[in-house]
Length: 90
Picture 1 (spheres, rainbow, N blue to C red):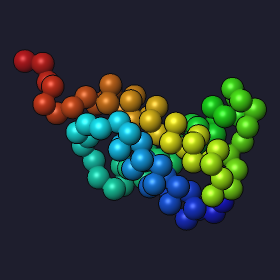
Picture 2 (cartoon, rainbow, N blue to C red; picture 1 turned 30 degrees about the vertical axis):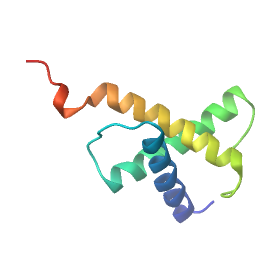
Picture 3 (cartoon, rainbow, N blue to C red; picture 1 turned 90 degrees about the vertical axis):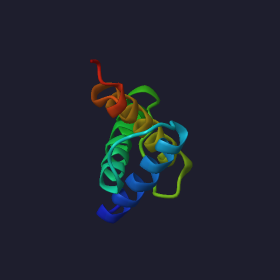
């Protein structure tokens, strides 16, 4: 998969992860792409480590499943670390 493929996979996987985990998140398109690309990398590592499966080609279901799983994990960590702007302690 080329550089543009990773960006497209990142954008779509990050957007799907945000739809599956609703809530208010700061950040726009660039943050979604970074979240998704990082999620694809994390998902590929998880797949290789736990399931002995690598990321496949762009249109394979396991590629998308691992990328979305990794994006959801990164989004959950991001929400814990950053928190939502309205939840500041006084």
